[in-house]
Image (cartoon, rainbow, N blue to C red; front, side):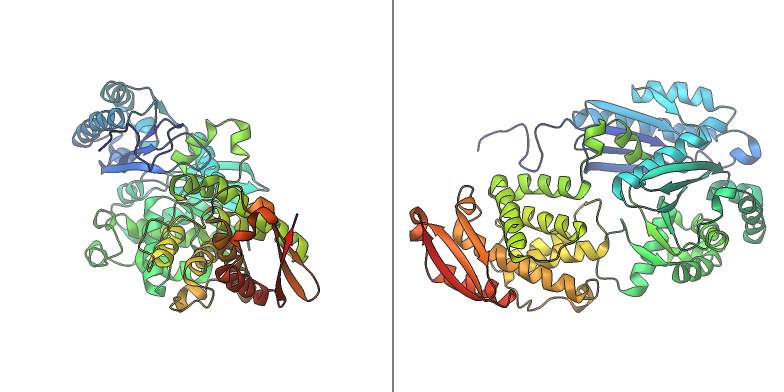
Length: 505
């Protein structure tokens, strides 16, 4: 067997980059596959050190917690080197900047990690968290809330830009300290802190973008309760009434009760009621319309800030879909030709298409051939699962369902036998019809070209009032056959036309 340096699942032009986040509750390492528009974590590990525990009352980080953090950082250094990370960015947040022994800890952290450690201000935290949300959801509109162990960062976002940001001492570990573990006293502290900030005014009807592990655990509970068909937290949306009810319920549960809930990480049982309490009071104060979970936050915002302006401007969904095409399809160039081929079809047919729908169609073409290595009877099912749960940014859950259904129909046929009814609930009638139409075009393209480059540009589909005509160059006449006739007929029915084939010069 030949030896290669890079596995086929990695893009060789990118060097891995590591981000170390020294938070008040956890110390985490994430190694990304490169500093690019849609980075994918190739390694993600955290150690719950609890550096922020007791800082509010003693003024110091606990020696045992500090020791655990330094051991974790030494391991993180070794892991980053193992991956060949070309750069390590390390940041520290509330506990390190506020504790009396914070400077000493940072000096030792730098030695353990072998890299500079930047202590962020509260304003820095708010800015990078908002940048992370915008990198993963460029259309975000409302307010970002990043809840860490020691603090809550809030930043307004409007028209794809960051507005004002503040930091408040409302992290769960801090609330436990200052309330003496009394949930009622903690509620009073939260209400007092949230009463003043003017940036919480005027948000009624907008979105609240929730960042942080505490709130992700709350979202998992809601997903399980609703038997939600997707298991991706990023851009999972909860209506404010449901979110407020859930937060109120969880804030009243004991750690022992929470440990019995399968969806909750056991180490979150103590802090989750306080995080739920913060969310409940924020929802009351702001009257936002929905809570939208963002898996992109501080670390992703930091990485995003390092990109060139041109790279930041790239569409995150199409960038990720293109990467997936390069990693999994038989011919990435063939995937691009398929997207262009459907451009021409939709233009010639005069089909109404919004900008959002167009980018989803092109993304569907880029991932149309990712399942070819699977057993032929399971290519549709496997591709659906890959697309539905891929680490895509810039796409909501209805969009995910649309892409997943399109790739399923492309492999399995447009009748959609065996499609999950719960998944269908995420798309409307128009989106379902588009998924079948695009899949029908892809199925025709496949029997014509095998998704190999150079064929589709030499064919054309023209849509008349009553006919859909496939025009083939004479040099391609031997491609004509029963499979082409059948697939052309399927596509023609989707367009309510009759099929025909013409041979050109």
